[in-house]
Each structure stands twice: as structure tokens, then as C-alpha cells.
Length: 17
Image (cartoon, rainbow, N blue to C red):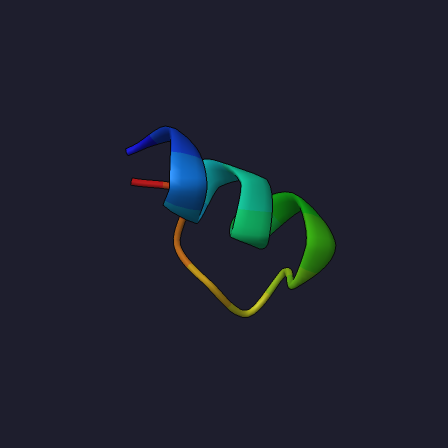
């Protein structure tokens, strides 16, 4: 999911899947 990937970029704690 691109949204989670974006969040992952901002918040390293979130998986980028």
C-alpha cells in the first residue's frame, strides 16, 4: 500500500507493506 509506504518513510516504526 502506497499510503503505508509513505507513512513508513515518515515513521520508520510502520512496516512498508
